[in-house]
Image 1 (cartoon, rainbow, N blue to C red):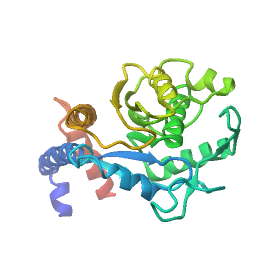
Image 2 (cartoon, rainbow, N blue to C red):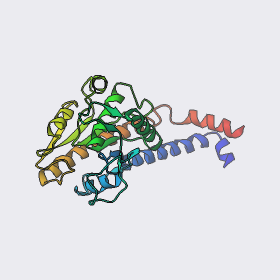
Image 3 (cartoon, rainbow, N blue to C red):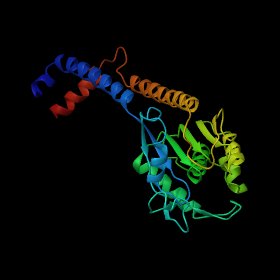
Image 4 (spheres, rainbow, N blue to C red):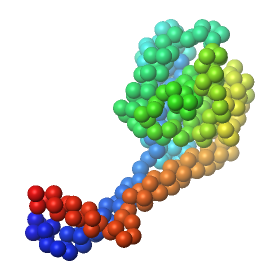
Length: 273
């Protein structure tokens, strides 16, 4: 094998074939990989509960997505609305006053999630219900303004279910300073007490997809039209991600006139040494 690398002509021919094979393999790997989504649950519930809620949706919607369901950073500090419906433990991401204008442990929560995303990502998108949706939009808005996640690739899409905006002016002036330019889908319930705030959050995004349903503050069961709408939206997300990955991988192919000979010479020198 060493002699093959050192013989003139053979090393370059071998490397040309190897580089072509490697580029071809990379393209297929990029096309087959799933988009990774961080899914943030609602107040005083859990990642397991959100996973169960999402399981009500048609499996084709997110079958090409790698969905990750972490638990909130803090144990529930009071009664959970799902007690008797779903087993504990329950968690919360941060605490707030009744007017949702003052927040406790929010900075710690943001820091925790940013560390989690860097260590366990990268994540292509975020999905959240209620408190988790509100937090997801905040992370994306903050990242767009360079406040957080500077060491993580830009988040490309978001699914908000019964989300809302923060109301603290010091947060709003940063997170929602500009229209958030990522693809987004927003579920808004006709009987949800957050119906109006959910619409306000959707308006903070550029060209949001809004899916309305007749239910309340919950992850809704989807009718045929909603399944079709969300499936088409998620398919467009995957297509854009795959096209971007293929373009990136294609740029790594040897260019015409530089078919690997230069790399071959370098490799021969390294082996010979």
